Length: 411
Image (cartoon, rainbow, N blue to C red; front, side):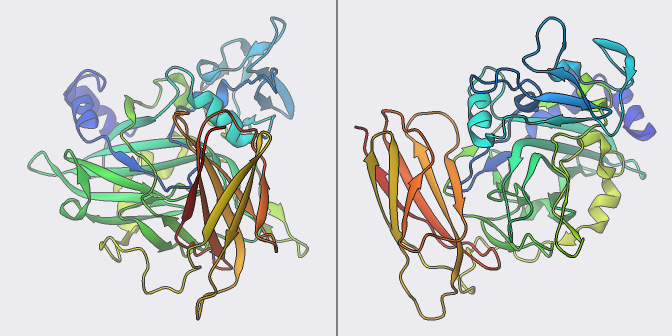
């Protein structure tokens, strides 16, 4: 936190128990998910602590090109968990200095299965991290940071990366109420007045874009102005969740001070040697707006449209008809897209299976290019429960069409 931020915390008492902590709780946001979203805003422990039956050694911390700790380590090795991450030196390896080049490697690469399994563990699901900081002119900002296990937003096969930190912030005005907000979207932000923010129970609603998890003020299609990302989309068809807020500062909990990367993804090079895609992200404290929220707000763009529309002026892929059957423990999903005048050709289809009562996000798969016969053998071992099956088309600009769905009954 900046010196001004430290002074603010001292003036108002400890954030977790004082007035600032109360403000962070009061305005902690609701997250509205897309109907096909496969990941939830959960604890970063879902990555740091992750080990599964398929990968009992678990995720690993890489330091200096070598494995330093593992989530499923034996007694002879350092155990990786969220508390292991520090600034300075690692607690179980006191002679090993923490480095910015350190990173967590998601070893299993079964991202959805791992994220869903960790989501079901106590204390993991539906978490947001609140940070209070004063800007250069003394105004108090409340920031909310969200962690997602994986970003599966892809354009032309690029853009996916392990780990995803997203955020919004709001400024407390002279009357003790918020006056403006900034919603982070990729490498920029979008700003508007507090009165224009959609709210529930007096708290802001955040529309998390499917796959990229960029934060939007309204549902619908959103142009990103970022190469290889194209359009973001949220149909507001998923759950509306208010995550539990935990207050974080520069050093508490210890993982906030860790400078490494949450994931092992690095940009890839195409045939011309040009790098595309994104690195796995660093944590909240490593971002400029952590200490300078006003600069981030001033550099953000004004919200272009606050009407809750879904892009009716856009020529999007049509809504498909969908059917699904069971073949043993697999689902065979069939779909057909009506050939409407002006409808662009599909580059991919998104297919999602949402298990009834399984308490985690759907399993969503991108099929690129779409199968010519309109049938997919969905790569998920079905449980003896009912599923909602959803299909949506994606065109060459990543413009997403409306969802078609059907029910797959329990056996």
